[in-house]
Every structure is written in structure tokens, then in C-alpha cells.
Image 1 (cartoon, rainbow, N blue to C red):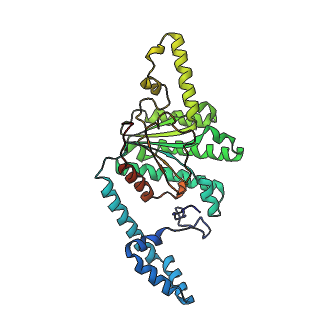
Image 2: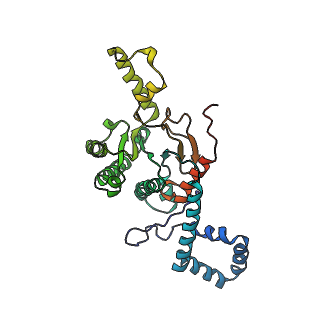
Image 3: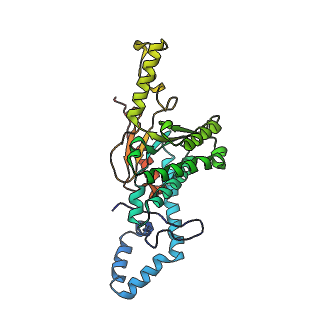
Length: 317
């Protein structure tokens, strides 16, 4: 079972998990108290009364309060450590595990995608806090069109809602976030195409942060399109074969004008790149997390960055 660490409550404080939420807060206490708490817990849990007391404690607001404070403290120390080293300028994320996350909590797959959509907003806030200027997320691949029509329709609706919401999102405008949609937009429903073009036009002047959303995207398809466009320009006399370089090819990709990702993070424990940014990731650092995308916590994100910082990027040297 993958590690799940999320509190499934909506804005009104209603438990959405049906009592099945799995918490990662308990290890935080062990982290601070070491082996002593393990020994004490083993002794207490020998009795039925002890088990009941322990269960009540873990469900109590007092435990949640102290656990939250401990988590915040650990995250703060981790952030302080990370800020001592160069941060990645561009992070790309393969968001994986929405449906498995929902299944393990006895939720519908629709709920998994909803939680996954909301996680994007959290991660964007983490990038704001750390000063990571470029975030690219893999939202929907060309291969995803093979899924059921019901799921595709739901995903298209959620994506349209998120793009329309971004138009009036104060965080987007205050932080000057330019949003670009990468992929074969012509494959998408007309209303989603309109929302995509609209948000790109509205945020085009912004330069502080960049959010790239890969929709109807495929790495091989991107390269094929680049070759086709180069071929067309060669035929028109705009480009000479002898002048084609790595820089030339990059200029024909969806990501034209952007630096390649420094770090690519994939969630859910899968260790493959799934046709994502095949050209751009030539020298990216890869990090695979065993946490499902909706359950990704800030500490997981920070640990990925710290791992990146401790690697030596040689670029073939």
C-alpha cells in the first residue's frame, strides 16, 4: 500500500472519507520522541483499556494541535536547510495516483480527480513561498483519451473549471503568473479550448512566475510536430537544414523560450516518464515519490528538492 497522508475534510469540516482517512501524524511524534514512545506504546497496548485510551488520544483535538505544530516545526527546519543551497528554477511534475488514492479510501474515482485538482493549487503556493519560478504539470496525456468517455468528460469539466477559476484568482494576478497550455489543444472540447486560449491571453504579460499545464500532451507527438514545422519552414526557405541545432529544435517545441526542467517529480511510486517532455528532460534530475498525487504533502515536496540539491549535476562532464 502506498503511503497516504491527507485529511479528507471539505470547507465545512465534513469528513469526506467515510472514516477511512489515514494519517501520517503519528510518525511525527515518534520522530521526536525516538524509541521511548515505541516502548511505552507497546506496554500500554497490552490492555484493552490502554488501546481505547490511545485511540481516543489520536482522535483528540489536543493530539491534532500538537501534531500540527510539530509538523510545522519540522517543515520550517527543512525549509531553512533548503534555502542554504541553490533551488531548482523549473520543476515538472507527473501527477499520478488519483484513482488509486480514491480506491484505497473507498471513494469514487471522481473524488480522486477532485482532490488531485485541488492539490495543484497547494503546490503552486509552495512554489510561491520558495521562489520557484517555473512549474510544469502533466494534467492529461494523449494516451489518456483511451480512458472511458465518462472519465474523460469528467476530467475535461474539472480542467475547464480550474482554468476559468484562474481568471479571477487573486494569487495568479498578485504573483504575476503566466499560464501556458502545452499540447494538442485541437483535440480538446471547444469550450475547454476557449478557456485555455482565454487564460493564456489574460496572463501573457506576466513574467514573475510561469505555470505550464500539459493538456492533450505527448512527448513524441511534440517532437513530430516540431519536425513537421521545421520541414515546412525548410520548404518555404525560412530554415536551412545545415542550420538546424539543438537550440533550433527547442524553439519549435511547445516549451519554446523556457529553460528545461531541473527536477522532474513523479508521484505514486511509478518509475517511468510516460511520454513526458522527452526532449526537455535530457539532463533533468528525476525523483520518484511513493505518495499518491492527492496525498502529496509539503514535506514530500521539500524532500524532493533537498534530494535534488544533494546531487551533482555533471551534464556529461
